[in-house]
Length: 302
Image 1 (cartoon, rainbow, N blue to C red):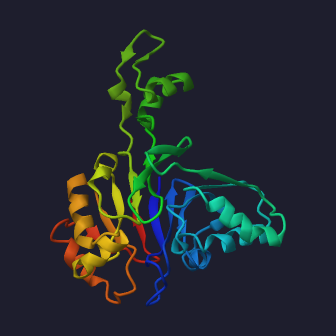
Image 2 (tube, rainbow, N blue to C red; image 1 turned 180 degrees about the vertical axis):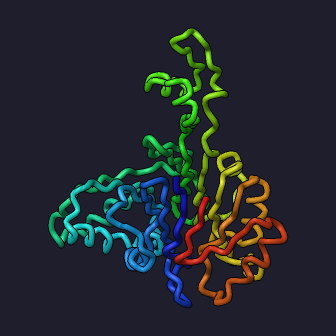
Image 3 (cartoon, rainbow, N blue to C red; image 1 turned 90 degrees about the vertical axis):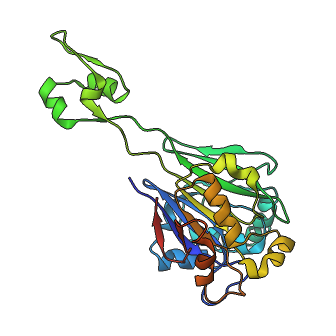
C-alpha cells in the first residue's frame, strides 16, 4: 500500500527561483493529507496531479503567511466544485478567526469546515483513523508552532493463500490466523500460526518539522521514523541568521537525523538567498548520507 510524500512548495517566506512557499501532500494508502498550505498550493496540486477533492484533513504548522496564505483560495475552490464532505483543519490557535474573516464576504460554503485548535506546549494525538495516527510535536519558532508525525497503525498478519485451500480454512479461521492465533482444524489437528501466516510489511512513519530551531527535545518523538522533513532554511554560511530567525541549517538537521536514526532526511524550507540548492546536500551528506534534496513535484516513497 502506498505511503508517499509529494512536495508542492519548498521555499521559505517568499517565492523565488520558481519555488513556491511551503506545502506538501502525504498519501497514506488511499488517503491524502495536506500539510501546510502556502501560496499557490492548489495550483501545484494541478501541476502534479494531486486529487485535491480527496483531501479530508489539513494540518497547519503555524500561522506565518507562507504556510497558510494558500488556504483561502483552496477552500473557495472546494466550494466552487460543489464539495459536500466536511474538511477538518488542525492548527495552532488563531487560524479559524483568520480564515473565517476571509471567507465571510463570499457567503456560505457548500461544505462544513471543522477547526481543531492544537495546544502547542506538549505532544498530542490530534487525529487517528483505522490506518494512521497523527501526533503534534511542539517546535521552537517565533510564534506557536507544531510539527506532525504520521504513523501507520499495526496491520494484521498476512495469510498464506495456499494454506487456505490446503486446510480448507473457514472465514473465522482465517480471521483468527491473521490475528495471530493458532488454528484448530475440524479433524482436531492444531496448525501453528507461523505455518499459516507471514508478517505484514514494516510500519512506516513520516515526521514534518518546520519551522524550527534544531532542538534535540524532539529526539524521543522522531526516533527511528522512516522519513524526516526538517527545516533547512539556511546553510552554515548564514548560521547566525538561522539563530536569529529561529530556523535551522542543513548541517544541524543532518546531525539531528543521525542522532534520531531516521531512515531518510529530506531538506526543505529554503531561504530565497539560495538559487543553487546543491549546497544543502554538500553540507548534509557527510554527516547523514541518506539525505535527499527536497524538490517540488518530486514524490518520495516511504
